[in-house]
Length: 445
Ligand code: XUL
Ligand code: CO
Image (cartoon, rainbow, N blue to C red):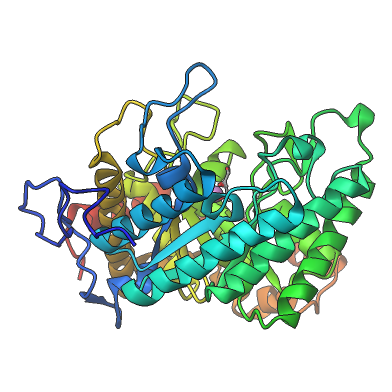
């Protein structure tokens, strides 16, 4: 095992220094042990660092090669690079103080020449990761299988028209679920970047959706058989790399899960930037998932308002995060899930410390968002305004309507007898101003 200062030698333990600190390498808001609404920030937020962007990404884009020359990527053998990456990752988690991490099978261990060799590589790395977890106390939030990078998945993974490729996808998921269980992960994610189509002219969409559901059933059965007690999660995204992805958004995914009877074992992992790509807000997607009782976990990041692709930037927009935390807290917080930073530094952010700075800002933003949201919920102002808007359903014909006890004709008669009335104000400016007052730091009581 490498010494704990091998990969980020200039970075010391990141600590909380408070809002007056000018130190870029310190938390201004995230004080892990501080309690809000009965729980510490660490328990509420359950931060996870993602392995892929943080330790596998090199800053390449369609117009240029990698700009981030990682010290852990220097060895000539893939397994040696994987071991160095593991050391770097755990040094990073420990110095940053994040309690969890997430990975794809191929982030942790390289693909081998055969299924057996790939499995062997993964199990070697899982053994090492387990030891690292034990020595540092860092835990696995979720694992997943990369069913999109290898050329064999160019026509899809679980939805591939070729049975042989579906079997390869199954082999990967089989090993990735077993690895997640072995490492104590509390969720297992499916993100289907290539589970979709590029042209309907060559695609049997119904067959592909049936196959996807069948594949997920098999994965669920295997996971439960080997003792996985956590949540299986689907991560909706409308497109990219596929023109159309089947898990388009939360509502589409919930419909799919219910149609195939998967909603007892599967929940949703909602990603901020995927929401904006689907023309929704992050809060909208969270609310849809929460209303269905299927909010499992989140991938925290942000897009760029001028770009139509998944820029996966670190979340710094406090307003969006307050709105998100309002939904998450109102929904009871995370059980098996948490906040995974599916975010990457820009390709021109090339200093060794930039990865820390990105995470520090994101963690501060969520800590602040949590506090503002908790204050708003505790004060109950928004809840009261919302409840007042629907009060006509609390008694009389409104209540009868909710209970299914009035007919359309009875509603017609009721309307016919009503005197003229002015519709109630929706008070949108008021609710927006209330959120801002809490952001400004004033309490209304
Ligand atoms: C891609 C994405 C993935 C998933 C895991 O947009 O978000 O990294 O989070 O496969
Ligand atoms: Co994601």
